[in-house]
Amino acid sequence: MAAKTKNTERREDALSRERIIAAAIEILDAGGENGLTVRALAAHFTTGLGAIYWHMSSKADIIAAATDAVLAGPAAAAPPDPGDAIRALALRVFDSIDDHPWAGAQLSRTASQPTTLKIFESIGLQVQALGVPAAAQFNTASALLSYILGVANQNAALAQSAEPGTNRTAVLEGVSAMWTDLDPTHFSFIRSIAPQLRDHDDRAQFLAGIDLLLAGIQASATS
Amino acid sequence: MAAKTKNTERREDALSRERIIAAAIEILDAGGENGLTVRALAAHFTTGLGAIYWHMSSKADIIAAATDAVLAGPAAAAPPDPGDAIRALALRVFDSIDDHPWAGAQLSRTASQPTTLKIFESIGLQVQALGVPAAAQFNTASALLSYILGVANQNAALAQSAEPGTNRTAVLEGVSAMWTDLDPTHFSFIRSIAPQLRDHDDRAQFLAGIDLLLAGIQASATS
DNA sequence: CGAGCTATGGATCGTTGTTCCATAGCTAGC
DNA sequence: GCTAGCTATGGAACAACGATCCATAGCTCG
Image (cartoon, rainbow over all chains, first blue to last red; front, top):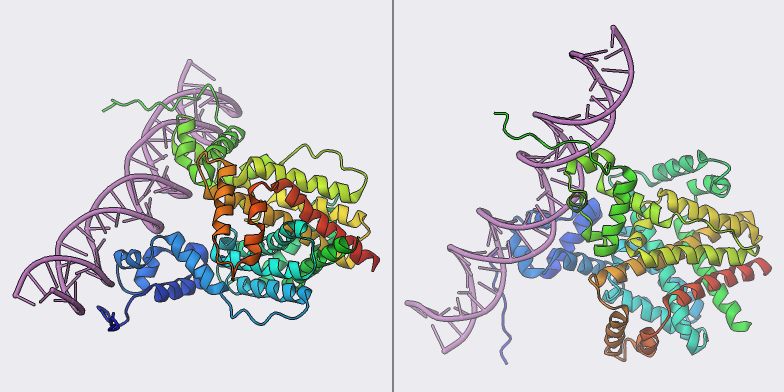
């Protein structure tokens, strides 16, 4: 059959779902979730609202698609060891959220988000490879997913709390100082770790939690 | 033109920050986060917007205060065993979010939320009691907090996705059916656990994750 | 050469958070 | 007892948002 040439270009730079999502990611990276408005998108293409809504059904649709696009990585070959595979998978999600914090809030927003399902599936497969009994696989994979999404959300929240081009170091300095000024009788622990906050590595801390879960899985299996 | 005398008399039921927060919780429980508008609050007290903004500085302030109020439990006496104390603490947060899902999304929104700080402090104290080395306490407590907030967020998202009086069982049935209909080659794990989703216990699953982390902490300490 | 679909630009609607202002009750000082 | 000033209230007004609707222009096909 003759290939239908859909070159119905009204504009030089034809609008499309892909181009809109790419622009949305740009705007989200620059201004956070509040910076993305349908009007800002329309202005980016020097067009009207109708053109945007012709390609996208709603703003939620736009953000969901942008999140999927940002997290749809090349799915690098999984390491042979299931534990390492989970670590690599988790870090891939973490790094994506680190680059695009607004996506972190979206990931846990709708449980049916395709990306979240794919992550959950990947985790589940590695949990099976770890030899976790069938009856415990659901709980184990859910725990890993919940932890990953939890960290993703906190990163997103932290990034949004200091919207503009604020330096990350400055933010941590501020929080650390705030923690140090807490009431010593009610917040002895937080005060004790306040100095560590200033130059701690988010990524390493995230990985430490994954390792804790993996150690727990190992321990539960051999007991 | 002295026609309209404005009815700005002092009210019998005097407005106050506490009464506004209580009403906000009522509205949030009934209609979720989207159901709470400043105008709905004003209508609840048969007053205007100015009266609300006199007591509360912003809508974010209202939601934050409502979240704090809902999670400020009686802080029951902690069990002697640190592990049990963490379990009890985590379940207290879980049950609060279960009753007021909208609070789950708020908890991780602002890291400086007093309630989150208190939870973090409590976790940290028990982590210390567990004998975790000082250098690992920050990471360990953070992992526990991230997991708890992660589950809280997912509960909040799930509750919001089916806003009205939809039955929880019906929602799970639907998701379970959706999982079963996934492509078998790409979602073998999710399909395998789909039946378990239908009648799984959220609370027990949450606790299983806590136990996994506790087992991991134990294992890391003795190795 | 029109009919019909695709796509666009923008007016418009309803709702939201927030600010502003006029005004009434209350209280302290004289 | 009177008034200046603070506390509190009710509601108008504003700016911005997501979403819908509509007129219209380009294009394909019969």
